[in-house]
Amino acid sequence: SPIAVRCYVKAYHYCMENFNLKPEVFVHGGSMGGISSTNLVLSGLIPVIAHSAYCPVLDTYNQIFLHPWCDGLPKYALGKIYKFDKDESGEYIYDENKLAGFNPSRNKKAETYPVPVKFWHCIDDPAVSYDITQKFVNKIRENGAIAYLRTFSYGGHEPQLVGKFINNPCGVDFFQGTKLQITP
Image (cartoon, rainbow, N blue to C red; front, side, top):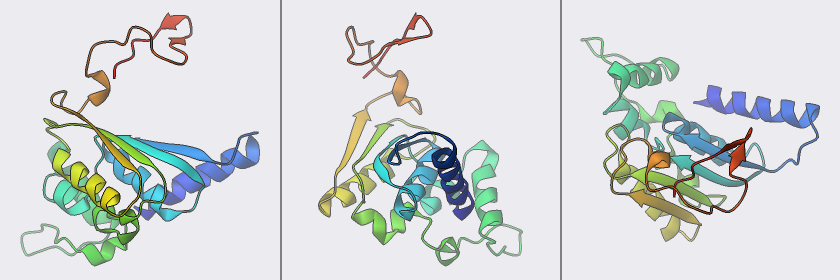
């Protein structure tokens, strides 16, 4: 929502004003953070180098509204934040116009994605539809922008846990004296 984007932009400016950091950033999101991070990138309000996400929510209608998780909480939040009307039984009525461009799958800006993007998604994800991520990536690529999708046949909603540990990963694989187990 615009609320999330404004919060991230304010946090970015706070960091730039209070710490000695380079201004360009990498943006990452996971699950519901996929839609927030995508909307942040599409806003153009901060200088993004590249974007990545695990099992990203990318479609407010097909994912949040039609197939919500957590007993429907995302659908309820969507209706409340965007002030959707309710029908006679008290159910929210989806209204794309009230989203004002905050649905990445229907945002024209997403078709020519402004930065390289890579998503990791398991085909058997029970929470977030893999098909929507694949269509999103395909549309970006069809329009000449850089987009990748790393697919796993299994793993559910946790692609970072899929696969055997890599014996000799590049980069730093120790944290506070503990060797990290890196997967593909």
